[in-house]
Image (cartoon, rainbow, N blue to C red; front, side):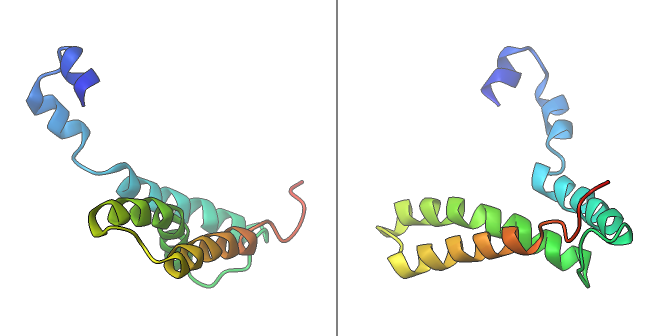
Amino acid sequence: MTALRESGIPKEQMKDLFAKSPLIKAVPLFMRWLDRAKRLGLVDIADTQHVALAVFGAGHMPIMMRHMSKHLGGVPRRSRLRALRLQDDLQRAHRPTKDIQ
């Protein structure tokens, strides 16, 4: 934000740039990518929206845990490990099921 202000971009234009967060934009794009991979037989998933939300959620979970730990005086080790295990499981589950030609 500071870089944008220093570049001379008016506040009103900055609001337009951030009308949607990058994550909100990324989920539908990832869903389309998953749909294409599914059509090509590269992944075997039932619901691309659920998978996209789970993948981004798992990716952001460690970040949220660190943020919350600053405000709550720490997050239990068991919770941190569970979040990291979920992230690993999701990444492993969505590797291509066959070689890309």
